[in-house]
Length: 276
Ligand SMILES: [Zn+2]
Image (cartoon, rainbow, N blue to C red; front, side):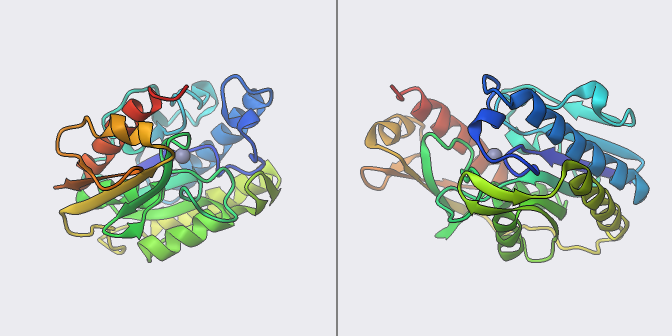
């Protein structure tokens, strides 16, 4: 049984500030080790639960955070960027399930540590089909289109609540509770890893034979992003097929979930180029 794991950083126990999540930040080297430990716990749990192969994808920032030699040697790692499918690069129909580790709340949430959707500096809000979609939903839709269900999401309490609300049938591990956007009450890294390993094992064990329903809303997908200012939307509008809704908002009708991820990347790269 093959298992896929996508790993982000803002939802890792102990992480509360960009000083920990940016390569240039003072506490980055510590935080990347916590992130690697949580990813490793999920890998070990997947093997405990019956996986025979595990593919891990580094999904944060420049996507070169996970320390390869500190990961379980049975796993393979995708790292680096740019990746057409970004946080879910490498997921395939052969995967029995996907696990999302270190995930966070979507842009515009209240009580979510470092909440954002894909590129926080330019995206104020992201909707699909008129509903707020966070990274969990966007990435789960790519997995779902391939028939791969998301079996486990780990992160702060708000990220986990959003995962349940958007995906329905999914296990979660809450590793911290946000007090405000930059403050949280967290588990110790070792305790978080133990919880993640056990939950990953249970989720993978229960993933056989179509037990869980993939998240696969039917296309077309009506994407809308509210940007932080009109210059960002001016740049995003250059992508062919984009409709400018108003000063801040661009829309796109995507025929499949992978196109959502590609359009969001193209929009945000262009929008980011306007930031002064
Ligand atoms: Zn993220």
